Length: 382
Ligand code: MN3
Image (cartoon, helix red, strand yellow):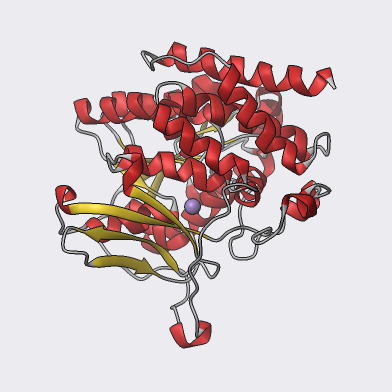
């Protein structure tokens, strides 16, 4: 049985991954969390990793106290995340941290020759070319954890990539599907945090409501499966039962279905290529009765259009769009800007911040910093 290190263990993906790990008796070598020291300590006592990392250094004294008497090394910050990612102790590193913070640990795991189960989509959006090139050089596998990309990965099994015509990336449409811009003008964070099908963290739930999440996934798919943007079609599918599909040369379309539960893609990434019982429930198609498919509204949901334009242009554009979005979502969550402003700020950053080629990690960081600063100054100007 494989051993696993989990970055982001107290989040939504991390806690569900631990359920999968428990069911299959996998050994956990390390756990890392952002700032939830109590929850991390509880997990450490149950899963007995050799080390833990708390990203927020101010929580180290508390964590040390909670783990007194346990033989567990305690690390902090980015240095800790990278020490875990690069340790080679685990067969696979599950990266489920939120945001750009995940990029360096991903690159570090690849450098160490360790396979990565990737739930951190910002990593591929900002540094897709760096990550995929490094993975190819090191012969490292990147297993998608995102449900859509896991679906595509599953549909591709036994098929040759050069026989793919296009992929059909499904989107739930989020809580505001069918709404007009006028109706969205007064939306607050609390409204956007109610997602119809998936139970997720705050950042991704807001991204789902603006459709930025689908924009990021569009870019993620381009990198993971080496596609041209013209080969990716987004289809709104409200029930989240068909998790995505692949159309081949002969027009045969293969899709992957299941209940909307992240434990299925998490388990597939961790146990690949094996299929075993999963701690979820079976799909009943007759319970759903009808599955619907519609076009997304690119006008109202400006973030989606901005993300697609960004990857078509390439280079640092996707990184800029991602950073502007992370920054804007932070302000929106604090009720300091309106819902529609997220898309406006992302579009403005994309058009204004200096782009260029992705040459190295430092260049990605530079573009990320500048895009965030651009968004902050725009907001503070008003
Ligand atoms: Mn997804």
